[in-house]
Image 1 (spheres, rainbow, N blue to C red):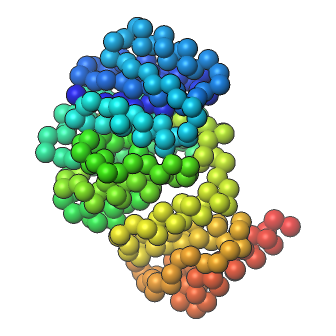
Image 2 (image 1 turned 180 degrees about the horizontal axis):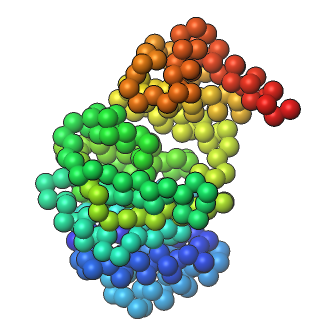
Length: 296
């Protein structure tokens, strides 16, 4: 059985769309756990109505504890061999679960395509080639999993979460949790089928991230056990943003990056060259000054 965990908080306008997309799937061996995280609107009643309509739905009402806490409560209550997460302002395409569950087999985690930032100018489609990874560093670095470390477009073997839970009270909890799960996994598959619709939310974490939130994101990336030049330069971009907003001590250690590294974008090649000349703090100071001048 697949346990589908849906945290719910202040999503009156999107909750029905989300739940309908889940219960209307052609794959029926599911349980849906709606975790009402102390939502002050009509979401608690909406959850209860859904549970009355479909016996596969269970509702947990709790005091507000945040997204990570709601997901953790759902994990603790789940009965399935497999887990997946759907945010209540998102939805999944018809037929997705059947296609993804067909790929589980001997895999511990299956990742499927995402329509990102639906309803925004940044809307884009993230797709995958059918591939199985047995080396998690290969998946993280060459598969660039660090750029799509979302918790929701994946199905997990539940035992991966033994002794692992999402960190409470922190933002960008996905990037902190996925590497821990990968270190317990033996096989990860990516497939070109199915589709998760990640909808743009102007009040969401991604849209409203401040300096402290970006610093948490930076620290999470620095805790991952895998690093190469291309990944390092992506993290460098976060360090530049953190420095610009907080002016705090540099957290990213120096790394000599070749400007001919495959996969580097042109601006990153320029930063890699500057890195060799002035170091991490120097690069941050240069871009802080540049951005300050361009805003005048």
